Length: 256
Ligand SMILES: Nc1ncnc2c1ncn2[C@@H]1O[C@H](COP(=O)(O)OP(=O)(O)OP(=O)(O)O)[C@@H](O)[C@H]1O
Ligand SMILES: [Mg+2]
Image (cartoon, rainbow, N blue to C red; front, side):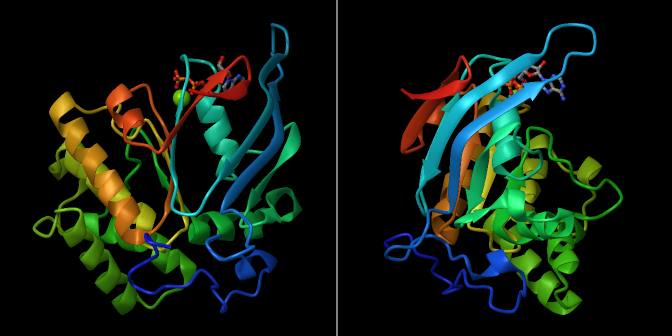
C-alpha cells in the first residue's frame, strides 16, 4: 500500500514469543485490520447515583494506515472508548481486537507488552516524565521493550529530528514549550514502531497556531511511519484532516 512504512519495518515482530506477535500491520491481503471493536459496552457503577451506561454497543474497524477522527459532546464517552481501544481499560461487554487478537485473552503482562509494541498514545497533557530529558523520554518505551540503549538512543534522536526538535535533546519537559512537549510525546509514541496511534485531544492544551502545527506534525508522522490513527477531538480543523469522522452519540458511533 502507498503509505507502507518506508523504513521497511515489518509488523511481524518475530522475536516476541507472545501470541499476538504474529499479527501484522493489517495491510496484507486477507490480514485482519489493525484495530476492531465489536459490540462494546462500558458501564460505570455510580457510588451514590445510578449506574452509567456510557458505551452502548460500539462497532468500529480501522484500516491499516487510515486516520479516523472521533468527535462528540463532552461526557459522551470518547476517552472511555479510546481507553478501551488502547487496552488501558476493559469493556463491560464486547471485544477489542488488535491485529486480530482479542485483547481480553491477554494477561496483564501480555496486555502491557501489546501497548508497548503495537500502540502509540498521545494525550492532551503530554505525560512526559519530568526528571528525564526529551531524548530519554523518547527512549523509555524502547528500553522497556528491551532494546539496547545505543539503538534506543539512535532511534529516539532520529525521531526528535523528525519532529523538529533536533536542538532540544537535553531539555527537560519544563524547559520546553507546550507545542514542543507534544512533539516529544509524538516522537515517544512512535519509537517502538506501533501500527496504531491513539490520540486524545492531542492539541487541546495548545493555542490555535501551535495546535495547527502539532496537527500537521501528527499527520505527517502518521504518513511517514505508516501507522493508523484514531484521534479524539473537539477541534473541527483537526477532525477535518482525518479520512473519516465518526460521532459518539448516545453510546454508539455514527458516521458524520
Ligand atoms: N472511572 C469512571 N467512573 C465513573 N464514571 C466515569 C469514569 N470515567 C468516566 N466516567 C463518566 O463517563 C462519562 C464519559 O466520560 P469520558 O471521559 O469518556 O467523556 P469524553 O467524551 O471524553 O468527554 P470530554 O470531551 O469532556 O473529554 C462521563 O459522564 C464521566 O463522568
Ligand atoms: Mg475525554
